[in-house]
Amino acid sequence: MDSKLVGWARAVKRRLHGKRGPVLWLFTDTARLPDPVAAAACLPRGLCGVVLRDDTRPGRAILAAALARVCRARGNALVVAGDTRLARAVGAGVHLRAGRRLHGMRGLRGPVTSSAHGAVELRRAAGAGAGVAFLSPAFVTASHPGAPGLGTARWAALARRAPAGMVVGALGGIDGASVRRLPGLRCAAAIGALAP
Image (cartoon, rainbow, N blue to C red; front, side):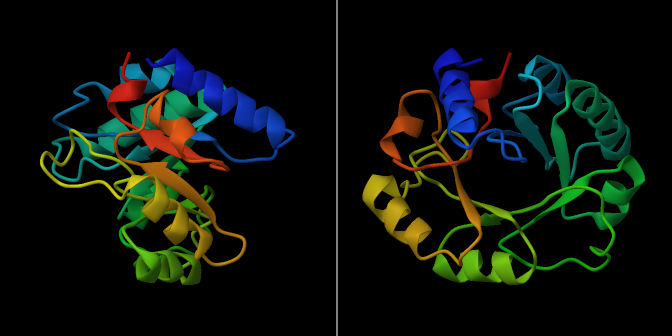
């Protein structure tokens, strides 16, 4: 786990005077993070959230239940990507893809987050009720080899155009060094930098 990234998150949380909501999010990834439960168990208490993707992983419901137990025990949040029924079953929030609203979102017990790859998806995410949208890829990332990142200037310009009240997080190539290249950032997500 990248201690500089965790240090950045703790500093942001202090600056926000402990306002609710995770500052640092772990995204699951079947290829890059084979044991997301072990990774979630190492996340700092009360500072983090986990976005369960892994749509094709066998036993996703069992994995969601295990992650929910670990997150609750550590005071961290859990959101389930694209599946309100599973989110409801484990007492989690939901993660939207590209800001697309899901059937059955009403009454969920956790946060609503979303992925976004541009201004249109940021607006769509806000309209669908997401409080946090992860604008990506901020930088070159191992998850999408050969794909360009937005870079500091373009990421910041898009984030400034986000709807009022939405927290824009960064995902893609995030670690303890790159996170500091995005001034004013209040929320970030990673895979490799948060692996145990």
